[in-house]
Amino acid sequence: MPAPFPQPKDLREAAAMQKSLAEAVILRGNPEFARYVAALDASHPTRFSRQKGPSIAAAVLWDKEKGEVLEVATAQMDEAPLFPYVPGFLSFREAPLYLAALAQLSRPPEVLLVDGQGIAHPRRLGIAAHLGVHLDLPAIGVAKTLLFGKPEAELPQEAGSAVRLMNGNVQIGWVYRSRTGVRPLFISPGHRVGMKESLAFVRLFAGKHRLPEPLRLAHQEAGARRRLAAHE
Image 1 (cartoon, one colour):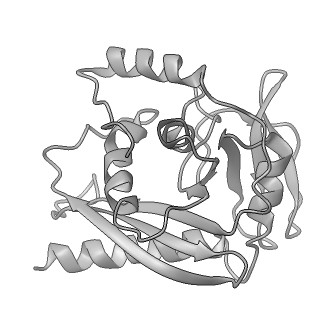
Image 2 (image 1 turned 120 degrees about the vertical axis):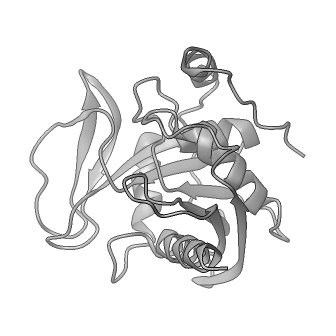
């Protein structure tokens, strides 16, 4: 069992924790032969409305060899105990939920695909990197929006296109277009995965939708469960 996920008392302590843990991130490894992948996404009440209800995290266990879902687990928590919503510190808010969902799976995953950032983060420790280090698992961040860094060039419109995401002269991830004409995704290694290998692994799940299929299903499950819980 992993150690309990630490919770800082304020943002200053949280930033210090991120900088320290970032030194443990390993940016090498290839998960291409892993079979069991856990895709993680969370759904929260909208910050800009009066919408209430718990936060829900979903873990979809995907069999890469068969191309199908083996199991789905969810965890929920009321808003009050959660770390505040602050961009750049979302791992302290969402990771405890993800860990609770992962603990319910009957089989441990070999790789984590996380809705969020890997090292494409101001302190090199987005939620995928944070979870990867905490669990000592290969982890990749697949974010829907850009948090940090700049694309090195304009991204072509064709499906499968990718350009490097840079912080100055240092590559921190990829800008990737999964479907022709759709908005790009932002991929970055989190832990125990190399830079090129992170992109290659996500490309294995290209399909009819913008998101990799396991993450798309986790996103749907988290949203559906949260809406249901809000009306109970």
